[in-house]
Length: 148
Image (cartoon, rainbow, N blue to C red):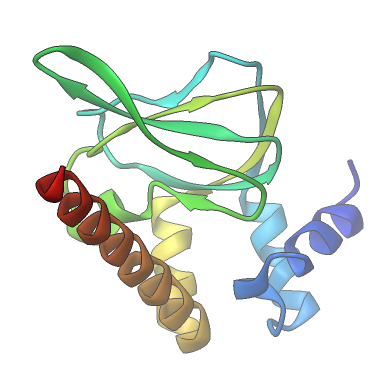
C-alpha cells in the first residue's frame, strides 16, 4: 500500500479528519500497518503498553481474563482505537484484543501517539470522548447486571 493510500485511510477516521495531510503522511510513515487473521492477538492482558492500534478494516474482540476463564466484553470495528488506555495510564494492558476476522490495523508507537496528543488538542479531545463513552457504557452494563 502506498503512503498516499495510508493517508486516505487515516482521513476516514473521525479523529484524524481535520488533521493536515502532511501531518497524516508523517503519521502513516512513522506507523506500521499490521495484518491479523481471525483468532490472532494484537496483545494480551498484562502485556506492556507500547503502542496504540487503529483498526482500519475488520473487527476485534475485547477479552478479559477472569477466574472462570476468558470472557468477551466488547467487539470493535473499523476506526476503533485500542491500546491507548495503557499508554495514557502508563500501566500494563487491561484487556486482550483479538482479531475476530482478517483485520488490518495501524500500529502507532507509544512515543508517536503521545506526540500526536500533545500537538493536536482535537485528537486528545476525541480520545477523551471515546474513553468517556466507554466508561458510560460500562456503567450502564453494571447497572443492568445489578438489576437482574
